[in-house]
Length: 407
Image (cartoon, rainbow, N blue to C red; front, side, top):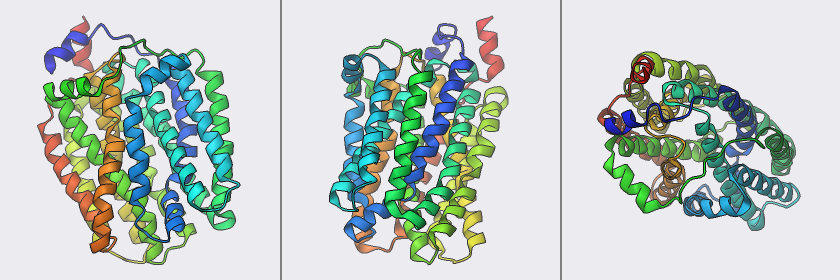
């Protein structure tokens, strides 16, 4: 792994911070709009079927995302570039949310919501590839850290407003807000991404990418960490609102809790990215972050307190760990590859749909036999496995090491 990384230093393009900041701004809008429905969507599906066991919706949706990730390259070529593909996916999101805003809650609207999830997940992958083109290894931590900080600032703002809208206007109000938001994102991307640089790369092939991951242990282990984080996210995003509603919290309370919960993503990720680049690398912080997330996830499953303060502290700490894992995972992975490795980027991004598929497959039968809290113990078990994957990583060089190798 080290030999491969050394060989690539100096060949990769210099960082383009101006281009990266454009992607950051779009990421803020995208994060704001996307999270406007992410934390209430499980309740939407629960209303459709009259049950908390909403896993089948996510299973079907992310199976489609997983499959389509490996069909994107022909689509990108046919449309005429990655940026135009981003336009198309955002346009699909606009139409789906517009239809959802006028349809009653039911099976047709549930299928449209699933289509909306597919389009937005693929659009995130497209935006991610654009950002990688503006980065270089020595500053990946701060580029990714700033991007995640700006994006999560948008994500942090959304749950408070979305729960207010839901309580006042119902799901029709949520989807009307999405229509406006995705329309703004589409207009902004057309203006600012029209000169974006997308590499002309070889076809993405799942089997080849998997062989590359297996040959390079660091890539394999960081994929395991990524899978665990995405598994944690899917369990917490889907089932935490349902759990909090079941113990008596209003949507207004949940909106406040989620706003507090998301603060660590804004406060910690950019500083952690700088520290990883300049002083420490990613490994030690990753191990500590996973350990914290594991402990707090166990606590979420154990307690059913009705104290707003208790849940605010608990959920805040859960995202302290997750914020660290997220930025350090991205920084570590992107230091191993460059912008021409879009087969590896695509494979790395399969962690989210794969985690959603596995999470749904395991949660569906689990909830037939155990109470809702069982899914949080399931998530903690996956995080424990990631703890050992993080220990197995070889730490990356710091910024001074990259500078010395270029000289």
